[in-house]
Image (cartoon, rainbow, N blue to C red; front, top):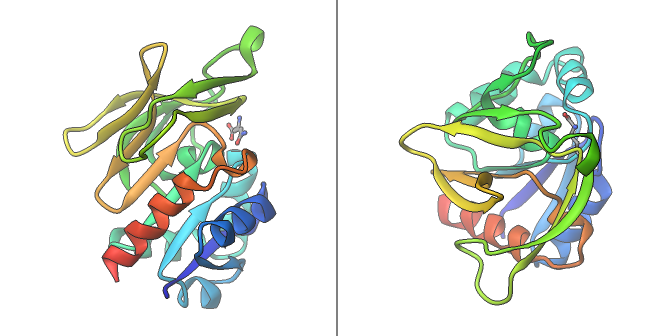
Length: 194
Ligand code: GLN
């Protein structure tokens, strides 16, 4: 069984570890480059992407993360993690570093003040059965995508779940719902890559 890391610099690390275990995967937190080197796939959690990327740089993880993603390591980002996996961020205070990998532009905090946090049922391609409960918390949306990016779900017309090869990202937080189907999908992507 492959080992899946959860980037444990900031954010809802524990919830992702629990969701991965619930989906039957082996999971460990990743804080150091040596720990990153040992995992077969990586989850980038929800949280605050500016803090996460600063800490990744401070801990010497930004370049190793970029290198592993470029070398084909499967990765899944939820919310702030989605932002971390975006090649480009649309933000007035740009200059924020990302790991990148997914050919997309994301807009941070896109749903606006009136709608900072909300829930919506989502039909998610690649996940069978009833709709997924989409929990959005100061969530980004995907502004535009390149040709290799497949949109798995939309909310009010905006892509909120995408996949490019071995990379998966959602604007919402399945780790907070007790429904482990998205983590099971990612675990199957990690197995398929191994
Ligand atoms: N607004 C956060 C950011 O821009 C993401 C919020 C979240 O992960 N729930 O990084």
